[in-house]
Image (cartoon, rainbow, N blue to C red; front, side, top):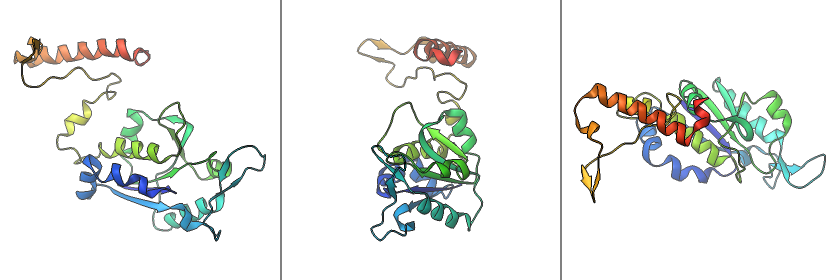
Length: 224
């Protein structure tokens, strides 16, 4: 899988992409992540990529020309399954979406900034808009990192035990059940006896019941 991220702050991805699962995926050559500095595609001598909105008001708008120039340059080399824009009013990122995106071959993620991008880009070029929550960030880089991490970990071979990813919260539209490890007892706090019984059928029943209970208590909207 190849992911091309268009941003004015490529250095923001150094931490998230140089550690843990994403780093492992890159080392295994299961994913290729390329960062593109948008300022390299502007004709402005001062490397500006934003300007005032025609309607006036506070805030700047990312200009259409450098964004289109960057995307068209990338499209000369390959076809893209999705051209994604990180936006507060996009479709809310969730596990089914991550599952779907992880099956693609080539993806572009455009990181928004300021008051957003020229609307004509959204109308004619962007194929999918994604939000990671009902709040506003300083820019789309953190959202792009979240989306990338969420889908990369699902690529076959990235996680050693692929069943682990399939048992994560939200995969079955419920949150995951509680988990425990050694020691069996700590300061009087005990691991539930059922998990030590060796009866796998009963254990799975308990896990399912706990998932339902926890979802009802913590994320009741998911039960709808």
